[in-house]
Image (cartoon, helix red, strand yellow):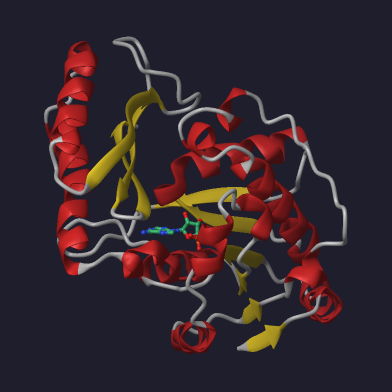
Length: 279
Ligand code: AMP
């Protein structure tokens, strides 16, 4: 695997590959890689000639400095994992390589920016679009792969691609889960054994809603889900929403595509999960 830390060296290497007509697949990450990230790389390998993975803990998308500081950064282990799955290229820039001082960015994302995750994390999606736009400009991927785990993020990035006419195809990849159902996340390392057990209420509740889903019963299903999560000791519900899969507004009986999304704090760790109810 080739490992680049500067934009110039990466761009130079990639331009040779672009000239050869090879298709470039891109998997942006913040590292602390787990099987969810690796599943994205495997999917990318099936669809593209070359797979580039980036590891960059992007400061502009964190609104809590403590969260940024404690974000796990096991880079040596990450490199081993990427070599094991035979990723072609790792791009791992420093913050100074990605950002000049006093940079400004504002994308008119619209309502999606302020709903659900956006409401809990003001400015988060501005930071996400800022860095993903930069990464797209550097890597110039033909296809970029993102996880359904961050469902709203996928919608926001799709919106950016439309707004800025970016020449990239986006693919949403399924959520990788632990055998007990917990959605894999770099943040799971912060969970104690008890918190990890408590966290299972999220995937269990999403599964129950999926199992019992009936579009005439949305209001009741949401209420029951909220109650079940609120009743779990050590879990503080941020939101549970049964939403229109495109707008993330509350779904109604007539909504064609529906997703259930949840966010909660388990101890000090904020977790998110979702399930598609009507595709
Ligand atoms: P992150 O490192 O958390 O920014 O995630 C990088 C990419 O991996 C994003 O597209 C995430 O949606 C995706 N991802 C994170 N966790 C999972 C998971 N459990 N299953 C599938 N994709 C995931």
